[in-house]
Image (cartoon, rainbow, N blue to C red; front, side):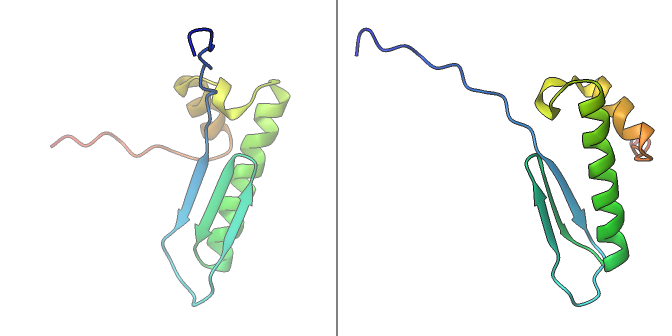
Length: 90
């Protein structure tokens, strides 16, 4: 045990999309770096489109999700039409 090397934990990242509207169907779509659950057919399709576009933008930059900074991810997310809500001022 004295010679055991410590492994550096590998960073992991996952996009999680949750559709809060419901039409009675259960929907689940997964990929190597995302999981999408719930939503109506339309909502689920929009989430799927956004995550595919995010992955295309990452690939164009030659990066994986776990390799981008928060700022770079925000830039990518914004470019595919995702918006952050304004900060809560309470």
